[in-house]
Image (spheres, rainbow, N blue to C red):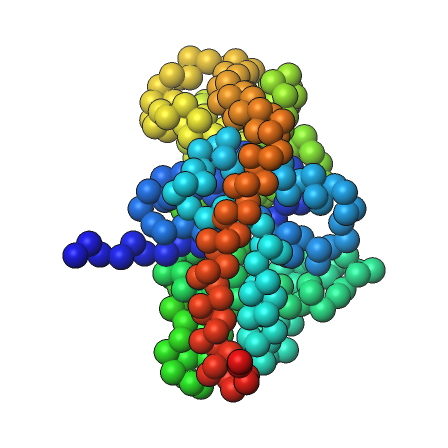
Length: 333
């Protein structure tokens, strides 16, 4: 008998444009993971509204992200690709898990503190409760693994704590998930401030390469990228963070090792090097953008994919929710 595939869950918010950091650190890795695991990939629109969104823009970005997933190589026939708000069990389980989560834990969350500082005029309960909804997202699918970056490890730990707390209070109900830290592309840095991670919400858009940037924009941003003192093109993240970041990006998009890239540009100046990196990235993004645009022109197809994905996700989610409701004593007909 063939062993059951392990389950993997991941999600991205449809807010702002995704960067090459999101692509290299998350979506590109998902393409290979979908062959190894039983995957659930969500468009996290419920998380998105913890910060005020323009409704029409949120709808547009949701569909655009679905098209982008597929354009990057996510196969809807191999995984459940769906919109979070289309599966009611996410909100239902979140409410139950709130009763197993302590206010102090939520107040200590780094992201709550950061977002509260950024959005001081809208410190809402959703902003604080974000990690409990994330725990519900993961635990609904009995996920064995969750791909996480360094900034999400705290949220995964809370999900693990909540799962154990519930399991101990009743009986084993939830799989306690493990994190998969993606080594390759896990931290792509800002082109203007290479000591910071590239962000889709950075104040200076010139430091981020967005997946929607056209060729001229990509090359212009790379030409302006911050380099370091000296002229040697060598990987040294401590002393040469700018050049090291550019070498990492070039390596990941060209498929060449860092050492090969260092040899290739051994006799080049910074200007020539930055142009080559920009052209390599632009060449890689072009087919993704073309495919995404083609998919967005066929809204009926995308709606069908998302409907099937939500139905697949709901079957698994509702099984878990039913177990939880029974154990906590909800009367069911």
